[in-house]
Length: 397
Image 1 (cartoon, rainbow, N blue to C red):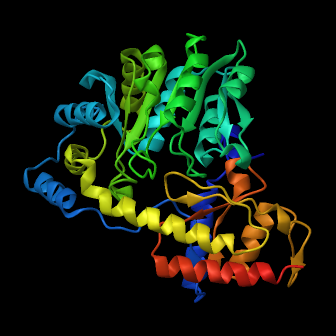
Image 2: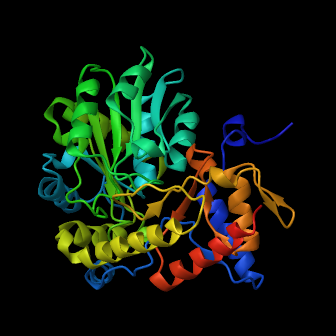
């Protein structure tokens, strides 16, 4: 009999973290691995952010801080929400957490009970489903195909809602697909959401600034669903601050209070120095990171061009984030060098062994027909990686 709880035994390991760990092991063993598995910008944190962190040390920000974050940081986040998203929040509607992942878990724990249903569009970020299961609620998957740009329609949402539905979690722009919902698509979803006043939505907008088609639209900007929407954001992706671990929510006051209460019993406040750095980031105009967005845009186009030359790889055009999510079912049933490809997992392991390129199976994101490729790497590295992938795929027969 296991001494470990059923809750933990039933919890899946993060596939993205697992693949990154495996590629690090192979690198340490002397293998020339190219890892395109993690969602982590390859840029360094901007100097003005690092300066703010150093000033925080010198100014002795070393004591316990308020659980939801320093007031001046929460005021800056409110100003950022107004500036970038046309959202009106007050500081008591903001809770700063140790990464957007904790922010989402706080909200899930604040809202759902065992037996509740939580709608999750597929493909989804790996952690959503496991967090819902940890809470005792039931994830309800709604499949959005490549043909519909991996975006759930209002009709699909309406059909998935039952009397047990309490919450929906989605990302915009989306991890793993890079798809971004348009104003009209979100408006259509908002019409459905507004028909169900006891239904809430977590809108994960961590990739908002990495958007190639204009300004990202926030679900909460539709007045009819403002009080049903919890907006998740953070500084990890846009400001290349993954290691600083700062995420935050804007939420209806009662939900913010509940998240504050939960966090007070888990971690208390987020690192004081990270908060000083985060304030500099959210105070900054998004134009400060325009060079990163332009680089990601160029890389996306490069990756689509190179992958488009490989027969059997089926693509759409992602509009944000830094991922492509190709359909690779054309390779199912083929084999080479002891590898037989039946699933996306088989293909990702084959490419790791044969091409020395680490990707993530689409199974981790709920889609067994696809693989996720992160293009948060230099153009030279991406060109080499896709060249290796093409050679390996051409060997399958």
